[in-house]
Image (cartoon, rainbow, N blue to C red; front, side, top):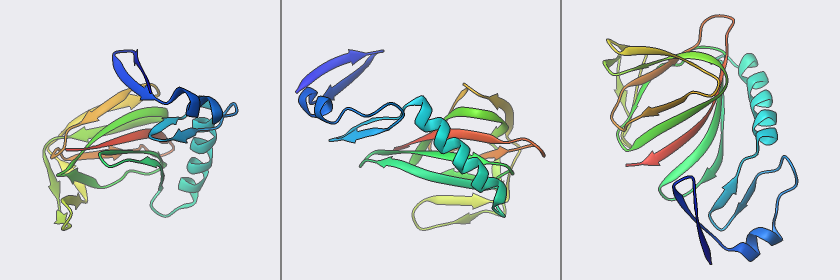
Length: 166
């Protein structure tokens, strides 16, 4: 196994396995804990999810890309605002792939309900701080932090989500 340092992150991958299963352009690669999402593939998935979100009652559609014991990745597309949420055991990192939204963090959840797995939901985040995010922005939400994504009428947001178990 060859280990390499890339942009301050230590990556470990079996070079022979990666070479044998090298992806075609625009195709993700997942082998033995190694995953690559290419810009063309992310764009294709984003476009498809955005079309589905526009047709859904909730205005939101997501897909899980890869799951590992301590983290997983997904893409979420929104054409409408979501409710407030808080994850006791998961931190979120959002990479905005397209569009714009307002992310509200802090405060508290209104009309809060709690599931047994530490997932809290509410109709909104009240008393939080609002930040408008655009394509290319990266948002980090610590576990235990109320947060909500608000999409203005006629706007949309597509973001890559990395959920990290705490």
